[in-house]
Figure 1 (spheres, rainbow, N blue to C red):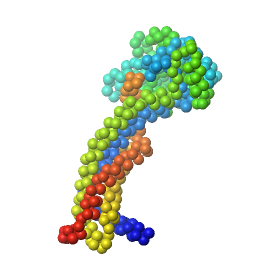
Figure 2 (figure 1 turned 180 degrees about the vertical axis):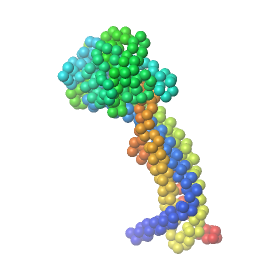
Figure 3 (figure 1 turned 60 degrees about the vertical axis):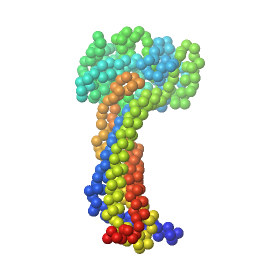
Figure 4 (figure 1 turned 30 degrees about the horizontal axis):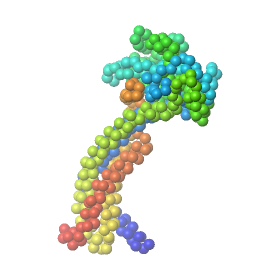
Length: 399
């Protein structure tokens, strides 16, 4: 026990001396700190894109919401359901009921071209035809301007993300799509969810405009409770009149976000890793400089009976201290620069634009700090070993 206390006290003494000399090496120390800060800022900034994209797709929906598509369909674009099938789905056991009947909305999903406000280039924007139950099923929808569209009329309401990113979607504007003109009568929010990237209208009007007859692509359903999912899915699987696929809404959108999320995460980690190599060399240079400038101090302490272990730990602590300072600086810069930044990108599952905001989350900041700590430990390890192995007689001759 006494030896442990002695070892800890030696670590504290050597570490204090080590940190006190940092201002004397402020140039090399600052280079290491800012190098690591750059790595962390890039890592957190790029990963915040993936995090924001995933949040936009997965933040939507009640846990009791499910999506029904044609069996074998992975996206709404390749699914097709006839009117009779949508009625069977609406009447299945477990479907919640509202004041106007089952909470089931048979919907049509098409893509239109609109120019981006920032560049003027055309982009794919989703236009969704919905039934009146859609507003009860997606109860996160809130009108922030105007009113809902009226059934049977060429009126649309626009998600605030779409209104922000694409031209011609201001309240009261007239939008010409094909041979039809549509009036924007409302703008809505959806707690940052995917619906904010969409334009909504009456499904009957959209069917007529695109000559789809009485066909649909999906049915959005609110169940009595999340526990009713198995019975609802089982009943439709056993019904010979339909051939459908039932997926929880959260799972459906999580799967759609996987491709873009994994791509951005992989690229971001690769870029940060390449930058980290340079940051490690910077940390190595800083800590070798620190050891060289403290040869006399280290030799004196070793001559007084200090062990090599406390010397190694003190160098590692200094390196870790500088690295964490860089991590905090880089994480803070990433938060200020990227958190909440609004943009839009392609969802390759639906081939349409998704408007979303970068999300610098606490988990990303922690990840950045861990990344910085690893760089600091690797960068300080070899200088620490050199300091511990330095012969006392050789070091004293440096005086």
